[in-house]
Length: 85
Image 1: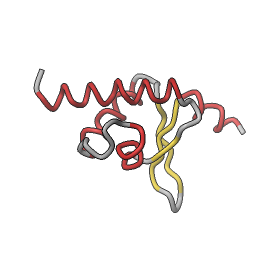
Image 2 (image 1 turned 135 degrees about the horizontal axis):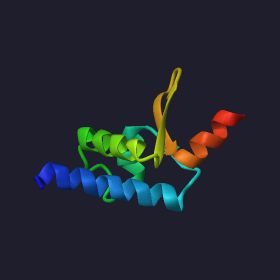
Image 3 (image 1 turned 120 degrees about the horizontal axis):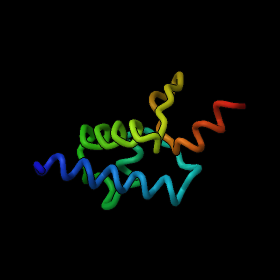
Image 4 (image 1 turned 90 degrees about the vertical axis):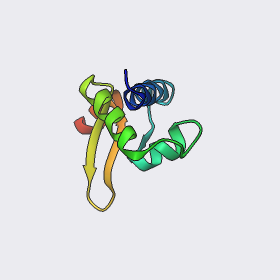
């Protein structure tokens, strides 16, 4: 496995842990890099986006486009319940 692939896998696992522990959390990819991952700000945005795409494909997170805000990611469980309202 390449270094980048390994990094993306580690980020994806960290994101999955974070939404499991904080099911109400929602943020942009930039915010996820700054607040959800340790140490903050050390992961490249393309790696974070790839990790989010992997977790979205697995049904762990959902992506929502919000006017004036941009793309927000949250737990798939939270995203499902907010769409029903």
